[in-house]
Image (tube, rainbow, N blue to C red; front, side, top):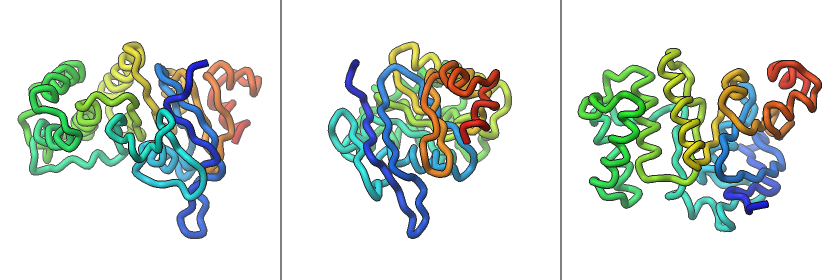
Amino acid sequence: MASPMLNLVGVAKHFGEIEALSLVDLKIYSGQIIGLVGGNGAGKTTLLRLMAGVMEPTKGTITFENKPVSQMRKRLGVVPESTGLYSRLTAWENIRYHSRMYGVDDKDSWNRVSHFAKRLDILDALPRHTKGFSRGMRQKTALIRALAHGPDILLLDEPTAGLDVTSARTVRSLVQQLRDEGGTVIYSTHHLAEAHQVCDRIIIVHNGTIRADGSPNELLELTDCESLEEAYVSLT
């Protein structure tokens, strides 16, 4: 079997006396959509931030191709639940600012940005200030921003939360296309139906621990359940 891109060994994260994650072991391989599924407070966002290298674990190690993930952040693209766009800047200016931080030439960045903006149907909105953007427009802009420097792994925290049906479908479709083109996506969500529809592999997080890890069909077989919702309840 190929070596994992991301490897988590014995990872724990404490915030004071609160143990947000406890001794997590995970291997993330390329070319998949991996769903992190769990309720509010389960530890999904903490786990995602650790894998993104924006937080250090209290215990354990996280490596990207055998190097500390904190040293490899340029090869990651991150879309947080809060998009973090600067409202006084246009969509393109937000994306360009981010790309320059990654050392990407404006022309190269624009080529990728315009490609994804067409796929997400917001090319005409790139010159507009983001202050008046809808939730869907902001989310699409943040997604393009995360893709503009050509990351090897895309990490998404609740990417369709608060989106209308059409925008959510567009985001899911792009994520699947990225996978089909050889990309790797880590997709945090509390929507079980969405995870079943989109993800090749599902990791169930509950109370800071990994309760199950497998394809949707494997989780159904493991629990002898007919739906992922029933499987989730039985595992948590």
